[in-house]
Length: 118
Image 1 (cartoon, one colour):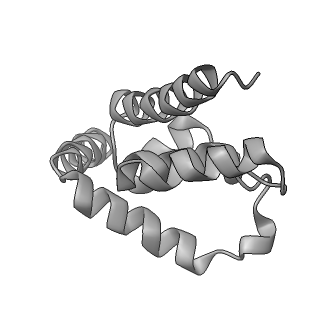
Image 2: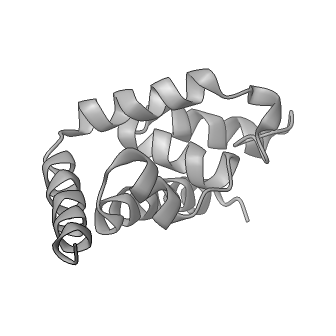
Protein backbone atom coordinates (compact mmCIF):
# COMPACT_ATOMS: atom_id res chain seq x y z
CA UNK A 1 0.00 0.00 0.00
CA UNK A 2 2.90 2.41 0.50
CA UNK A 3 3.82 2.08 -3.15
CA UNK A 4 0.60 3.73 -4.31
CA UNK A 5 1.39 7.28 -3.05
CA UNK A 6 4.89 7.10 -4.53
CA UNK A 7 3.50 5.88 -7.83
CA UNK A 8 0.86 8.61 -7.79
CA UNK A 9 3.53 11.31 -7.27
CA UNK A 10 5.71 9.89 -10.02
CA UNK A 11 2.77 9.82 -12.41
CA UNK A 12 1.87 13.42 -11.56
CA UNK A 13 5.46 14.52 -12.26
CA UNK A 14 5.48 12.61 -15.55
CA UNK A 15 2.23 14.26 -16.64
CA UNK A 16 3.61 17.70 -15.76
CA UNK A 17 6.80 17.00 -17.74
CA UNK A 18 4.78 15.95 -20.78
CA UNK A 19 2.56 19.02 -20.49
CA UNK A 20 5.67 21.22 -20.30
CA UNK A 21 6.54 19.97 -23.77
CA UNK A 22 3.49 21.78 -25.15
CA UNK A 23 4.33 24.62 -27.48
CA UNK A 24 3.28 28.22 -26.93
CA UNK A 25 0.22 27.89 -29.17
CA UNK A 26 -1.19 24.99 -27.17
CA UNK A 27 -0.56 26.75 -23.83
CA UNK A 28 -2.14 29.92 -25.18
CA UNK A 29 -5.18 27.94 -26.33
CA UNK A 30 -5.57 26.50 -22.81
CA UNK A 31 -5.46 29.99 -21.31
CA UNK A 32 -7.86 31.39 -23.92
CA UNK A 33 -10.37 28.62 -23.15
CA UNK A 34 -10.08 29.44 -19.45
CA UNK A 35 -10.53 33.18 -20.05
CA UNK A 36 -13.55 32.49 -22.27
CA UNK A 37 -15.23 30.60 -19.43
CA UNK A 38 -14.67 33.17 -16.69
CA UNK A 39 -16.79 36.25 -16.28
CA UNK A 40 -14.95 39.36 -17.43
CA UNK A 41 -16.67 41.30 -14.65
CA UNK A 42 -14.59 39.26 -12.21
CA UNK A 43 -11.40 40.79 -13.59
CA UNK A 44 -9.58 42.33 -10.66
CA UNK A 45 -7.95 45.03 -12.73
CA UNK A 46 -8.31 45.43 -16.50
CA UNK A 47 -4.97 46.13 -18.12
CA UNK A 48 -4.74 49.68 -19.39
CA UNK A 49 -8.06 50.63 -17.82
CA UNK A 50 -9.19 54.19 -18.15
CA UNK A 51 -9.49 56.60 -20.99
CA UNK A 52 -6.25 58.48 -20.63
CA UNK A 53 -3.39 58.66 -23.09
CA UNK A 54 -1.18 56.46 -20.90
CA UNK A 55 -3.85 53.73 -20.75
CA UNK A 56 -4.18 53.82 -24.53
CA UNK A 57 -0.40 53.36 -24.91
CA UNK A 58 -0.43 50.41 -22.53
CA UNK A 59 -3.31 48.79 -24.43
CA UNK A 60 -1.37 49.23 -27.70
CA UNK A 61 1.73 47.58 -26.24
CA UNK A 62 -0.32 44.69 -24.82
CA UNK A 63 -2.10 44.19 -28.16
CA UNK A 64 1.26 43.82 -29.95
CA UNK A 65 2.66 41.22 -27.52
CA UNK A 66 3.09 37.58 -28.39
CA UNK A 67 -0.16 35.75 -27.56
CA UNK A 68 1.20 33.64 -24.68
CA UNK A 69 3.02 36.60 -23.14
CA UNK A 70 -0.17 38.68 -23.32
CA UNK A 71 -2.29 35.84 -21.89
CA UNK A 72 0.05 35.36 -18.92
CA UNK A 73 0.06 39.11 -18.26
CA UNK A 74 -3.76 39.08 -18.24
CA UNK A 75 -3.81 36.18 -15.78
CA UNK A 76 -1.26 37.66 -13.39
CA UNK A 77 -2.40 41.29 -13.50
CA UNK A 78 -6.07 41.04 -14.47
CA UNK A 79 -7.01 37.83 -12.64
CA UNK A 80 -4.49 38.32 -9.79
CA UNK A 81 -3.21 34.76 -10.19
CA UNK A 82 0.23 33.93 -8.85
CA UNK A 83 2.90 32.41 -11.05
CA UNK A 84 2.46 29.14 -9.15
CA UNK A 85 -1.30 29.15 -9.83
CA UNK A 86 -0.76 29.77 -13.54
CA UNK A 87 1.86 27.02 -13.61
CA UNK A 88 -0.38 24.45 -11.93
CA UNK A 89 -3.60 25.34 -13.74
CA UNK A 90 -2.12 25.35 -17.24
CA UNK A 91 0.63 22.75 -16.87
CA UNK A 92 3.61 25.02 -17.46
CA UNK A 93 6.86 25.23 -15.54
CA UNK A 94 7.08 28.24 -13.23
CA UNK A 95 10.27 29.35 -14.98
CA UNK A 96 8.41 29.51 -18.28
CA UNK A 97 5.57 31.53 -16.77
CA UNK A 98 8.08 33.90 -15.12
CA UNK A 99 9.96 34.35 -18.38
CA UNK A 100 6.80 35.40 -20.24
CA UNK A 101 5.64 37.64 -17.38
CA UNK A 102 9.03 39.39 -17.19
CA UNK A 103 8.95 39.87 -20.97
CA UNK A 104 5.47 41.43 -20.76
CA UNK A 105 6.43 43.79 -17.94
CA UNK A 106 9.64 44.65 -19.76
CA UNK A 107 7.77 45.54 -22.96
CA UNK A 108 5.34 47.80 -21.12
CA UNK A 109 8.14 49.43 -19.13
CA UNK A 110 10.30 49.98 -22.22
CA UNK A 111 7.42 51.61 -24.07
CA UNK A 112 6.56 53.85 -21.13
CA UNK A 113 10.23 54.83 -20.71
CA UNK A 114 10.53 55.58 -24.43
CA UNK A 115 7.42 57.77 -24.30
CA UNK A 116 8.51 59.49 -21.10
CA UNK A 117 5.52 58.16 -19.14
CA UNK A 118 6.06 57.57 -15.43
